[in-house]
Every structure is written in C-alpha cells, then in structure tokens.
Image (cartoon, rainbow, N blue to C red; front, side, top):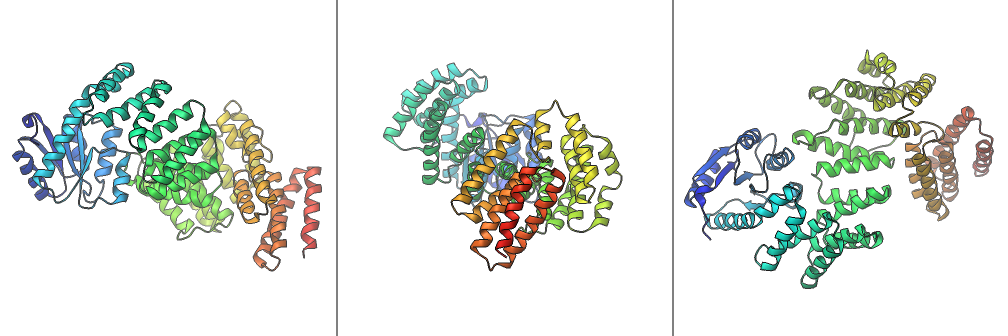
Length: 542
C-alpha cells in the first residue's frame, strides 16, 4: 500500500546505533520520504521536537544508558511536544509483555519488531497515516474542547463503516460520557457488544453505570473484565478511581497490588500503591512500592522527591515496630535513598531538612545515636524554630524527637503545631494521627471503621488477620488506646489458641507493657478498667 504524498512526511529516526538509523533512513527514502532527521539519545529527540513538528517518529526502545524509548515518549506527551498529528512508533528487538505494558500509558501508535522489512514498514505507516488523516478533524475538535461538534463528526465516521469505525465508536463513547450524555453512550456500547465483546466497550458501559449511580454494577463489571482480561490496564485504573472516590482503601490497595503485578514498570501506579499502602499502615508494601517508584523515576519526567521521603518515613516506622522486609536492609537502603536525593540537586531546603530528620530517626531507631546526630547537624534547631511553616517537616521533627527519647519536647512541638495549623483541615488530620484521640471528623470516622473491621475479623476467629489489621491501624494512630486495647484482646485470644508459641507470649508481654505505659499518661478510668480485665485474662493463660 503506497504512501500518499510521502514527500510531505517529516520523519525522525531515533536509535543509538548509527547503522540502524542509516538502514531506516534508506528504507524511508525508498518509500518516497525524503525529509528525515536523526537522533541517537533522548535529549536530542526532545530538542528536535521543541523546534519542529514531525509526522512520524520511529524510536528504538533501547537507547543505551539513560532514558529509553518509553521515557522519551512519556516526556514528549507530558511536555506536550507532540500531538495526535505525530505518529510515534516504538521499534524494539524484543516486544515483551513487560515492555509493551510499561509503554501503554504513553500510547505509542504502534510497535515494530526488529529486523524490519520494507513491506511491513510501508503497510504500517500507510495504515496509521490513513487513520490519522481520517481523525484529524476530530482530534482537533477534542483538543479545542468542541465536544458537541466532535460528536457530530464521530457519528459521521461511525456511519461510514470504514476501517476507522471501531476507533470512532470508542472516541464517540468517551466523548458522550464527557458530555454526560449517558443514555446515548449506553446505547452505543450495547450496540457494539451485541456484535463483538470488546474490552473498551465493557469498560465504557461500566463507567456509564457508575455515572448513573449504579455503583455496584459498575464494580462488578470491572472486576469481571479484569478477571477476563487481566492485561487490560484501563479496567484496573477505572476500578481504582471508583475505590478512591469511595475511600475503600483496603479494596483499593488490593486492586493496586494486582495491577502493579501486571505492569511493574509503571511509576505512577507504583506511587499510587505506595500512597494507599501508607494510608493503610502497611509498611512493607509502602517500602516496596516506594522503592520501585524511586528506581523507575531515575530517568522519568514523573520523578518526585516525595517517593524518597515516603520511603524514609516508612523505613523509620519499620524499624520502630521491628518489621522485617525481605531482601531489604532498611538502614542501608535509607542511606542510599538520602544520598541520591542529596546528589540530585533537586531538593528544596524544607525537604532537605525533612529528609535529614527522617534519616536521623532511622539511625536512632537502629541504635546508632551518633550517626543520627551527624545527619541532622545544625538543621535540628532550624526545624524546631520553624513550626507552622511546613506540616510534613514539623511531623518529621516530632518523629525525630520521639526516636531520641525527647517525648516531652515532642509533645510541646505537637501542641504548637495544633495551634499554628488550626485553620488548615488537611494539616490537622495529619497532626490528629499523633494524638491519643482524633478530633477531626475524617479521622474519627476512620478509627471507627478500623475498629469495626478488626473486631469483625476477631469475632469470626480470624486472629491472624485481626492482628495484622490492628497492627496496621496502630501504625496509623499509634497513640490511640482503644485500637491498642483491641489489639491486646486479639493477641490474648491468639495466645490461647496457640499456648506453646513462645514468640506469641513475648509479643503479648510487650503489648501489655506498651498499653500500660500509654495509660499512665492518659488517666482514662474506662480504658484502665478494660486494661486490668485484659491483663487478668493474660495472667490466667500463664
């Protein structure tokens, strides 16, 4: 299928081997394409695309050290250096599932396997150019947010029953949803599904049902779709969006864990998993996902300091609660994390102090007080005097003070923080988690839900699950006595069921001592009475 007007095509060939660039250039010349540029590295591509518009980019996936083809496309999309008018074809010697899925979010127009031949190259480019030209007006209207006009254009394309019909139907459904014309979108998706079960149509129907208020049907349809087509990432993402909206954090984490198994190289999904795991008090998953996000961010335009700060904070919590993470030395990984942050020259002053405080806390909890002092040096006094400037910095300072035994000073700083942030609800929620009893509505509701779920597990006799759940809840609200007492009660029942396990008995004694110490400063008669009852039960089992 010969290319139409090949002389008008402006192409860019990207590969780190000059021999392949020459081969590709020669093949394009034979197809009539004469206006060709070349690049060997990512920064050259970005420079070319800043200055010129290309109709076609043929980019190898492996570009040697540094950014790969996925990173190049990711940044081109992120910085809006290319539009729908530019066809981006990923060229690779090995189109593995992992590689294809990792590039999915950046939406390359096609993949080509090496070695290439002229016939395949001509067919692919010709087909893509035809589709681009047929949809050019539609994409222009969508970019200009002329959605009603785009619907009219798409209806024309759908009724033409051409090669572009399926993509036109897909775009039409998405645009109708955007316009909240849900009945029309539902009719479209059902008509498509009558002829053929297409993943995008099932997804669209689920989105329509959710928008119409039928949330249970939407979630069921998405879960069924994921079971049938586990590699269809938009279904995972749509379910995640619903669960985020509903604040069903446990189900959301399970969904995120599943999708990162499918697509482990996705930095944004790894970050989302780290965030929700942190919200659930799951230190192990937070550390693992944050670590992945840090490594994936090395060459990505989505690199974010908060991945490293989240890792350091989780590492401190892990050491504080004696949590072991397989194949991970928390101190050494934290030192490496801080070192990379400091070497990047991208840390603003507040985040640098925060990172140093978190690292110092890691050292202190690992029994290395001298190293803790060396990391913070002069920034401790700076952090202590800047209360109210940055909530995350303030919280890191409180954590550091507690880690070195200065609990009185930590409580004083916490009290000052509550006064400084009294008109900032989001900051108050963070402070709330460090106090004995939450005062914000969201945190009171969260504690109630945590207790309810944990108690249900306990009553059903799932002591291990209940212990794990209450353990994570106590990570989130470490000074909440009610949660600690429920954890203690569950532990007593667990010991009763396995009386010969010495590790459980030691765990029980530690929990008794911890709750008794907390109650000494709380002076709550009801909590004290319940503790005495639980302590007596613990003594009865020897």
